[in-house]
Image 1 (cartoon, helix red, strand yellow):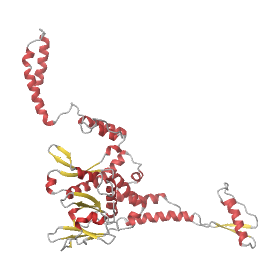
Image 2 (spheres, rainbow, N blue to C red; image 1 turned 120 degrees about the vertical axis):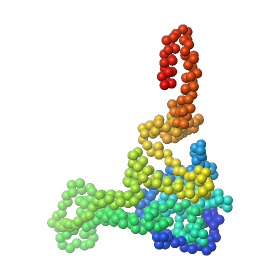
Image 3 (cartoon, helix red, strand yellow; image 1 turned 45 degrees about the vertical axis):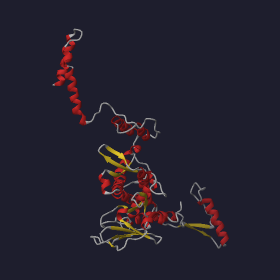
Image 4 (cartoon, helix red, strand yellow; image 1 turned 45 degrees about the horizontal axis):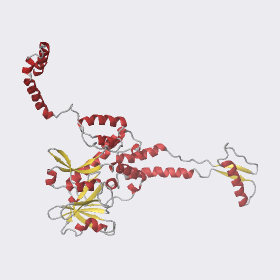
Length: 430
Protein backbone atom coordinates (compact mmCIF):
# COMPACT_ATOMS: atom_id res chain seq x y z
CA UNK A 1 0.00 0.00 0.00
CA UNK A 2 1.24 3.49 -0.86
CA UNK A 3 1.01 5.79 2.18
CA UNK A 4 2.33 8.91 0.43
CA UNK A 5 -1.14 9.89 -0.67
CA UNK A 6 -2.81 8.85 2.57
CA UNK A 7 -4.41 12.23 3.24
CA UNK A 8 -6.06 12.32 -0.18
CA UNK A 9 -6.92 8.62 0.07
CA UNK A 10 -8.95 9.23 3.23
CA UNK A 11 -10.42 12.66 2.49
CA UNK A 12 -10.35 12.61 -1.31
CA UNK A 13 -14.04 13.50 -1.69
CA UNK A 14 -13.88 16.44 0.74
CA UNK A 15 -10.66 18.30 -0.08
CA UNK A 16 -12.52 21.58 -0.72
CA UNK A 17 -13.60 23.31 2.48
CA UNK A 18 -17.26 24.41 2.44
CA UNK A 19 -17.66 28.16 2.00
CA UNK A 20 -19.17 30.78 4.28
CA UNK A 21 -18.65 28.82 7.46
CA UNK A 22 -18.68 30.60 10.79
CA UNK A 23 -17.40 29.70 14.23
CA UNK A 24 -20.05 27.83 16.20
CA UNK A 25 -21.42 29.61 19.24
CA UNK A 26 -22.21 27.59 22.36
CA UNK A 27 -24.69 28.47 25.08
CA UNK A 28 -22.12 27.89 27.82
CA UNK A 29 -19.80 30.49 26.32
CA UNK A 30 -16.96 28.05 25.77
CA UNK A 31 -14.74 28.27 22.72
CA UNK A 32 -15.51 26.25 19.62
CA UNK A 33 -11.95 24.85 19.56
CA UNK A 34 -10.73 21.74 21.36
CA UNK A 35 -6.99 21.22 21.74
CA UNK A 36 -6.06 17.91 23.38
CA UNK A 37 -3.61 17.86 26.25
CA UNK A 38 -0.53 16.16 24.81
CA UNK A 39 2.38 14.67 26.68
CA UNK A 40 2.01 13.87 30.35
CA UNK A 41 -0.91 11.37 30.57
CA UNK A 42 -0.01 8.84 27.88
CA UNK A 43 3.73 9.17 28.58
CA UNK A 44 3.17 7.87 32.10
CA UNK A 45 3.62 4.09 32.35
CA UNK A 46 0.71 3.60 34.79
CA UNK A 47 -1.68 5.68 32.66
CA UNK A 48 -0.64 3.73 29.57
CA UNK A 49 -1.03 0.37 31.33
CA UNK A 50 -4.59 1.30 32.31
CA UNK A 51 -5.47 2.44 28.80
CA UNK A 52 -3.88 -0.61 27.21
CA UNK A 53 -5.70 -3.03 29.52
CA UNK A 54 -9.11 -1.58 28.67
CA UNK A 55 -8.24 -1.36 24.96
CA UNK A 56 -7.14 -5.00 24.79
CA UNK A 57 -10.33 -6.27 26.39
CA UNK A 58 -12.63 -4.04 24.34
CA UNK A 59 -10.71 -5.07 21.20
CA UNK A 60 -12.01 -8.61 21.71
CA UNK A 61 -15.56 -7.39 21.17
CA UNK A 62 -17.14 -7.33 17.73
CA UNK A 63 -19.12 -4.59 16.00
CA UNK A 64 -21.93 -5.97 13.86
CA UNK A 65 -24.70 -4.64 11.63
CA UNK A 66 -28.08 -6.29 12.24
CA UNK A 67 -31.65 -5.58 11.24
CA UNK A 68 -34.58 -6.18 13.56
CA UNK A 69 -37.69 -7.48 11.79
CA UNK A 70 -41.05 -8.82 12.88
CA UNK A 71 -39.61 -12.34 12.62
CA UNK A 72 -36.56 -11.56 14.74
CA UNK A 73 -33.06 -10.15 14.28
CA UNK A 74 -31.23 -10.94 11.05
CA UNK A 75 -27.69 -10.20 9.91
CA UNK A 76 -27.23 -6.93 8.03
CA UNK A 77 -25.17 -5.82 5.05
CA UNK A 78 -22.28 -8.21 4.32
CA UNK A 79 -19.85 -5.54 3.09
CA UNK A 80 -20.52 -3.30 6.08
CA UNK A 81 -20.11 -6.21 8.47
CA UNK A 82 -16.73 -6.99 6.91
CA UNK A 83 -15.61 -3.43 7.62
CA UNK A 84 -16.92 -3.50 11.18
CA UNK A 85 -15.71 -6.94 12.22
CA UNK A 86 -12.61 -7.56 10.09
CA UNK A 87 -10.99 -4.58 8.36
CA UNK A 88 -12.34 -1.07 9.01
CA UNK A 89 -9.63 0.42 6.79
CA UNK A 90 -6.57 -0.84 4.89
CA UNK A 91 -4.18 0.03 7.73
CA UNK A 92 -5.63 -1.80 10.72
CA UNK A 93 -7.62 -4.81 11.83
CA UNK A 94 -10.91 -4.49 13.66
CA UNK A 95 -9.16 -5.22 16.97
CA UNK A 96 -6.48 -2.58 16.36
CA UNK A 97 -9.20 -0.16 15.30
CA UNK A 98 -11.04 -0.53 18.62
CA UNK A 99 -7.80 -0.36 20.61
CA UNK A 100 -6.86 2.93 18.93
CA UNK A 101 -10.30 4.40 19.54
CA UNK A 102 -10.08 3.49 23.24
CA UNK A 103 -6.57 4.96 23.53
CA UNK A 104 -7.77 8.28 22.11
CA UNK A 105 -10.93 8.13 24.21
CA UNK A 106 -8.96 8.00 27.47
CA UNK A 107 -5.99 10.13 26.43
CA UNK A 108 -8.04 13.02 25.02
CA UNK A 109 -11.48 12.21 26.52
CA UNK A 110 -12.67 12.55 22.93
CA UNK A 111 -12.43 10.03 20.10
CA UNK A 112 -13.25 10.85 16.47
CA UNK A 113 -13.81 8.30 13.69
CA UNK A 114 -14.15 9.57 10.14
CA UNK A 115 -16.71 7.74 7.96
CA UNK A 116 -15.36 7.51 4.42
CA UNK A 117 -18.13 7.18 1.81
CA UNK A 118 -18.21 7.07 -1.97
CA UNK A 119 -20.29 9.42 -4.12
CA UNK A 120 -23.32 7.17 -3.60
CA UNK A 121 -23.03 7.27 0.18
CA UNK A 122 -21.73 3.71 0.54
CA UNK A 123 -19.35 3.32 3.50
CA UNK A 124 -15.82 2.54 2.27
CA UNK A 125 -13.80 2.82 5.45
CA UNK A 126 -13.65 3.94 9.07
CA UNK A 127 -10.62 5.94 10.24
CA UNK A 128 -9.77 7.01 13.82
CA UNK A 129 -8.51 10.59 13.53
CA UNK A 130 -5.27 11.81 15.12
CA UNK A 131 -5.46 15.59 15.30
CA UNK A 132 -3.73 18.62 16.72
CA UNK A 133 -6.96 20.52 17.33
CA UNK A 134 -10.65 20.41 16.44
CA UNK A 135 -12.80 23.39 15.55
CA UNK A 136 -16.60 23.38 15.28
CA UNK A 137 -18.17 25.56 12.58
CA UNK A 138 -21.66 26.15 11.20
CA UNK A 139 -23.12 27.11 7.83
CA UNK A 140 -26.08 29.31 6.99
CA UNK A 141 -28.47 26.43 7.79
CA UNK A 142 -26.89 25.97 11.23
CA UNK A 143 -25.53 22.57 10.23
CA UNK A 144 -22.41 21.61 12.18
CA UNK A 145 -19.01 21.04 10.61
CA UNK A 146 -15.76 19.77 12.12
CA UNK A 147 -12.42 21.25 11.10
CA UNK A 148 -9.45 19.01 11.95
CA UNK A 149 -6.04 20.65 12.18
CA UNK A 150 -3.30 18.03 11.85
CA UNK A 151 0.21 18.16 13.25
CA UNK A 152 1.70 18.16 9.73
CA UNK A 153 0.03 21.53 9.02
CA UNK A 154 -2.82 20.21 6.88
CA UNK A 155 -6.47 20.58 7.76
CA UNK A 156 -9.81 19.24 6.58
CA UNK A 157 -13.41 20.27 7.21
CA UNK A 158 -16.25 17.73 7.09
CA UNK A 159 -19.82 17.60 8.29
CA UNK A 160 -20.23 16.61 11.92
CA UNK A 161 -22.59 13.79 10.92
CA UNK A 162 -19.72 12.31 8.88
CA UNK A 163 -17.77 11.74 12.11
CA UNK A 164 -18.43 9.27 14.90
CA UNK A 165 -17.66 11.12 18.14
CA UNK A 166 -17.67 9.66 21.65
CA UNK A 167 -16.54 11.62 24.69
CA UNK A 168 -15.72 11.21 28.36
CA UNK A 169 -16.05 13.64 31.30
CA UNK A 170 -18.76 15.34 29.26
CA UNK A 171 -19.89 18.06 31.66
CA UNK A 172 -19.03 21.71 30.95
CA UNK A 173 -18.73 21.91 27.15
CA UNK A 174 -21.76 21.22 24.97
CA UNK A 175 -19.88 19.09 22.44
CA UNK A 176 -16.44 18.11 23.80
CA UNK A 177 -15.32 16.03 26.73
CA UNK A 178 -12.95 17.69 29.21
CA UNK A 179 -9.23 17.26 28.53
CA UNK A 180 -6.75 15.75 31.00
CA UNK A 181 -4.79 18.93 31.71
CA UNK A 182 -6.30 19.33 35.18
CA UNK A 183 -8.36 16.32 36.29
CA UNK A 184 -5.62 13.74 36.41
CA UNK A 185 -2.53 15.94 36.51
CA UNK A 186 -2.46 16.19 40.31
CA UNK A 187 -2.59 12.42 40.78
CA UNK A 188 0.04 11.84 38.11
CA UNK A 189 2.31 14.43 39.76
CA UNK A 190 1.95 12.58 43.06
CA UNK A 191 2.79 9.29 41.38
CA UNK A 192 5.86 10.83 39.75
CA UNK A 193 6.97 12.20 43.14
CA UNK A 194 6.74 8.72 44.69
CA UNK A 195 8.69 7.21 41.80
CA UNK A 196 11.35 9.91 42.21
CA UNK A 197 11.67 9.06 45.90
CA UNK A 198 12.38 5.45 44.97
CA UNK A 199 15.16 6.56 42.61
CA UNK A 200 16.62 8.80 45.33
CA UNK A 201 16.51 5.91 47.82
CA UNK A 202 18.56 3.78 45.45
CA UNK A 203 21.06 6.57 44.95
CA UNK A 204 21.33 7.24 48.69
CA UNK A 205 22.03 3.59 49.27
CA UNK A 206 25.49 4.09 47.83
CA UNK A 207 26.18 7.38 49.68
CA UNK A 208 29.30 7.94 51.86
CA UNK A 209 28.97 5.92 55.09
CA UNK A 210 32.32 6.50 56.78
CA UNK A 211 35.93 7.78 56.61
CA UNK A 212 39.18 5.87 57.18
CA UNK A 213 41.86 8.03 58.86
CA UNK A 214 45.42 6.86 58.15
CA UNK A 215 48.16 7.81 60.58
CA UNK A 216 50.89 9.91 59.01
CA UNK A 217 51.03 11.09 55.47
CA UNK A 218 50.40 8.68 52.59
CA UNK A 219 50.73 9.18 48.94
CA UNK A 220 47.52 9.20 46.96
CA UNK A 221 48.32 5.87 45.36
CA UNK A 222 49.00 4.28 48.75
CA UNK A 223 45.72 5.63 50.15
CA UNK A 224 43.81 4.16 47.24
CA UNK A 225 45.49 0.78 47.65
CA UNK A 226 44.77 0.71 51.40
CA UNK A 227 41.14 1.68 50.82
CA UNK A 228 40.67 -0.91 48.11
CA UNK A 229 42.22 -3.62 50.26
CA UNK A 230 39.88 -2.72 53.15
CA UNK A 231 36.69 -2.55 51.05
CA UNK A 232 37.46 -5.71 49.08
CA UNK A 233 38.19 -7.61 52.26
CA UNK A 234 35.53 -6.35 54.67
CA UNK A 235 32.95 -4.22 52.83
CA UNK A 236 32.12 -6.68 50.06
CA UNK A 237 29.50 -9.43 50.18
CA UNK A 238 32.29 -11.95 50.82
CA UNK A 239 32.52 -10.73 54.42
CA UNK A 240 29.66 -12.73 55.88
CA UNK A 241 30.40 -11.73 59.48
CA UNK A 242 30.03 -8.00 58.96
CA UNK A 243 33.14 -7.39 61.13
CA UNK A 244 36.30 -5.55 59.99
CA UNK A 245 39.69 -4.89 61.63
CA UNK A 246 42.16 -2.04 61.50
CA UNK A 247 45.64 -1.71 63.01
CA UNK A 248 46.91 1.34 64.88
CA UNK A 249 47.96 2.94 61.60
CA UNK A 250 44.34 3.73 60.71
CA UNK A 251 40.98 4.44 62.33
CA UNK A 252 37.40 4.39 61.02
CA UNK A 253 34.94 7.24 61.58
CA UNK A 254 31.30 6.42 60.87
CA UNK A 255 29.05 9.04 59.24
CA UNK A 256 25.49 8.92 60.53
CA UNK A 257 23.02 9.91 57.81
CA UNK A 258 19.30 9.35 57.52
CA UNK A 259 18.46 7.31 54.45
CA UNK A 260 14.88 7.54 53.21
CA UNK A 261 13.64 4.12 52.17
CA UNK A 262 10.92 3.04 49.75
CA UNK A 263 7.40 3.09 51.19
CA UNK A 264 5.18 0.50 49.49
CA UNK A 265 2.03 1.98 51.03
CA UNK A 266 2.70 5.36 49.44
CA UNK A 267 3.33 3.74 46.07
CA UNK A 268 0.10 1.71 46.24
CA UNK A 269 -1.91 4.78 47.24
CA UNK A 270 -0.48 6.92 44.43
CA UNK A 271 -1.06 4.19 41.86
CA UNK A 272 -4.59 3.43 43.07
CA UNK A 273 -5.59 7.08 42.63
CA UNK A 274 -4.71 6.76 38.94
CA UNK A 275 -6.52 3.41 38.67
CA UNK A 276 -9.69 5.04 40.01
CA UNK A 277 -9.80 7.40 37.03
CA UNK A 278 -10.28 4.30 34.87
CA UNK A 279 -12.47 2.30 37.25
CA UNK A 280 -10.02 -0.62 37.38
CA UNK A 281 -7.52 -2.12 39.81
CA UNK A 282 -4.20 -3.93 39.75
CA UNK A 283 -5.81 -7.32 39.17
CA UNK A 284 -7.27 -6.14 35.87
CA UNK A 285 -3.89 -4.74 34.85
CA UNK A 286 -2.05 -7.98 35.60
CA UNK A 287 -4.82 -10.29 34.40
CA UNK A 288 -5.07 -11.92 37.83
CA UNK A 289 -8.84 -11.45 38.21
CA UNK A 290 -11.61 -13.77 39.28
CA UNK A 291 -14.81 -14.43 37.38
CA UNK A 292 -16.82 -11.99 39.50
CA UNK A 293 -14.09 -9.32 39.23
CA UNK A 294 -14.07 -9.56 35.45
CA UNK A 295 -17.87 -9.33 35.26
CA UNK A 296 -17.72 -6.20 37.42
CA UNK A 297 -15.01 -4.78 35.14
CA UNK A 298 -17.08 -5.60 32.06
CA UNK A 299 -20.27 -4.02 33.39
CA UNK A 300 -18.63 -0.90 34.86
CA UNK A 301 -15.97 -0.11 32.21
CA UNK A 302 -16.30 -2.06 28.95
CA UNK A 303 -20.08 -2.08 28.56
CA UNK A 304 -20.54 1.73 28.90
CA UNK A 305 -17.98 2.30 26.12
CA UNK A 306 -19.65 -0.36 23.97
CA UNK A 307 -23.05 1.31 24.41
CA UNK A 308 -21.64 4.70 23.41
CA UNK A 309 -20.04 3.20 20.29
CA UNK A 310 -23.13 1.28 19.17
CA UNK A 311 -25.44 4.25 19.66
CA UNK A 312 -23.11 6.63 17.80
CA UNK A 313 -22.39 4.13 15.01
CA UNK A 314 -26.11 3.54 14.51
CA UNK A 315 -26.86 7.26 14.45
CA UNK A 316 -24.09 8.19 12.00
CA UNK A 317 -24.07 5.20 9.64
CA UNK A 318 -27.80 5.03 8.88
CA UNK A 319 -30.43 7.46 7.70
CA UNK A 320 -33.65 8.00 9.63
CA UNK A 321 -35.46 5.76 7.15
CA UNK A 322 -32.90 2.98 7.56
CA UNK A 323 -33.12 3.20 11.33
CA UNK A 324 -36.89 3.07 11.07
CA UNK A 325 -36.55 -0.26 9.25
CA UNK A 326 -34.63 -1.76 12.16
CA UNK A 327 -31.03 -1.20 11.05
CA UNK A 328 -28.60 -0.80 13.93
CA UNK A 329 -25.05 -1.56 15.06
CA UNK A 330 -24.53 -3.87 18.01
CA UNK A 331 -21.41 -5.03 19.83
CA UNK A 332 -21.00 -8.72 20.55
CA UNK A 333 -18.86 -10.15 23.32
CA UNK A 334 -18.29 -13.73 24.35
CA UNK A 335 -18.39 -13.05 28.08
CA UNK A 336 -18.83 -16.76 28.80
CA UNK A 337 -15.19 -17.43 27.89
CA UNK A 338 -14.13 -15.59 31.06
CA UNK A 339 -16.31 -17.66 33.36
CA UNK A 340 -15.11 -20.66 35.33
CA UNK A 341 -15.64 -24.09 33.78
CA UNK A 342 -18.40 -24.86 36.28
CA UNK A 343 -20.24 -21.63 35.45
CA UNK A 344 -19.92 -22.22 31.72
CA UNK A 345 -21.33 -25.72 32.06
CA UNK A 346 -24.28 -24.43 34.06
CA UNK A 347 -25.04 -21.70 31.47
CA UNK A 348 -24.81 -24.14 28.57
CA UNK A 349 -27.11 -26.62 30.33
CA UNK A 350 -29.65 -23.84 30.74
CA UNK A 351 -29.43 -22.33 27.24
CA UNK A 352 -29.16 -25.47 25.10
CA UNK A 353 -32.68 -26.88 25.71
CA UNK A 354 -34.26 -23.55 24.81
CA UNK A 355 -32.44 -23.26 21.49
CA UNK A 356 -30.69 -20.08 22.62
CA UNK A 357 -27.29 -21.64 21.88
CA UNK A 358 -26.02 -24.21 19.38
CA UNK A 359 -23.64 -27.12 19.83
CA UNK A 360 -20.89 -25.28 17.92
CA UNK A 361 -21.34 -22.20 20.06
CA UNK A 362 -20.90 -24.39 23.13
CA UNK A 363 -17.77 -25.93 21.64
CA UNK A 364 -16.40 -22.46 20.92
CA UNK A 365 -16.93 -21.46 24.56
CA UNK A 366 -14.75 -24.38 25.64
CA UNK A 367 -12.13 -23.77 22.94
CA UNK A 368 -13.06 -26.61 20.57
CA UNK A 369 -13.57 -26.48 16.80
CA UNK A 370 -17.05 -26.73 15.34
CA UNK A 371 -18.50 -30.00 14.07
CA UNK A 372 -20.69 -30.77 11.10
CA UNK A 373 -24.34 -30.11 11.89
CA UNK A 374 -23.38 -28.26 15.06
CA UNK A 375 -25.04 -25.03 13.91
CA UNK A 376 -28.54 -26.56 14.07
CA UNK A 377 -30.54 -25.41 17.06
CA UNK A 378 -31.79 -28.10 19.41
CA UNK A 379 -35.01 -27.40 21.30
CA UNK A 380 -36.57 -29.44 24.09
CA UNK A 381 -40.13 -30.65 23.45
CA UNK A 382 -40.97 -29.65 27.02
CA UNK A 383 -41.23 -26.00 25.90
CA UNK A 384 -43.84 -24.22 23.78
CA UNK A 385 -44.71 -20.64 22.90
CA UNK A 386 -47.00 -18.84 25.32
CA UNK A 387 -49.21 -17.78 22.41
CA UNK A 388 -49.71 -21.44 21.45
CA UNK A 389 -51.04 -22.53 24.84
CA UNK A 390 -54.68 -21.69 23.99
CA UNK A 391 -54.58 -23.69 20.76
CA UNK A 392 -52.89 -26.54 22.60
CA UNK A 393 -55.73 -26.69 25.14
CA UNK A 394 -58.39 -26.56 22.41
CA UNK A 395 -56.74 -29.48 20.60
CA UNK A 396 -56.74 -31.44 23.85
CA UNK A 397 -60.44 -30.75 24.38
CA UNK A 398 -61.31 -31.80 20.85
CA UNK A 399 -59.33 -34.97 21.26
CA UNK A 400 -61.11 -35.77 24.52
CA UNK A 401 -64.59 -35.29 22.99
CA UNK A 402 -63.78 -37.48 20.03
CA UNK A 403 -62.86 -40.41 22.22
CA UNK A 404 -65.84 -40.23 24.62
CA UNK A 405 -68.09 -42.58 22.61
CA UNK A 406 -65.37 -45.16 22.27
CA UNK A 407 -64.67 -45.10 26.00
CA UNK A 408 -68.34 -45.80 26.83
CA UNK A 409 -68.15 -49.22 25.12
CA UNK A 410 -66.12 -51.69 27.15
CA UNK A 411 -63.24 -53.29 25.25
CA UNK A 412 -63.15 -57.04 25.34
CA UNK A 413 -65.95 -57.02 27.91
CA UNK A 414 -63.77 -55.31 30.55
CA UNK A 415 -66.05 -52.68 32.06
CA UNK A 416 -63.61 -51.74 34.79
CA UNK A 417 -61.08 -50.32 32.30
CA UNK A 418 -63.75 -48.18 30.67
CA UNK A 419 -64.91 -46.79 33.95
CA UNK A 420 -61.42 -45.85 35.06
CA UNK A 421 -60.60 -44.22 31.72
CA UNK A 422 -63.83 -42.27 31.65
CA UNK A 423 -63.20 -41.06 35.17
CA UNK A 424 -59.83 -39.59 34.24
CA UNK A 425 -61.22 -37.88 31.15
CA UNK A 426 -64.03 -36.42 33.21
CA UNK A 427 -61.61 -34.93 35.71
CA UNK A 428 -59.45 -33.44 32.98
CA UNK A 429 -62.43 -31.80 31.28
CA UNK A 430 -63.52 -30.32 34.59
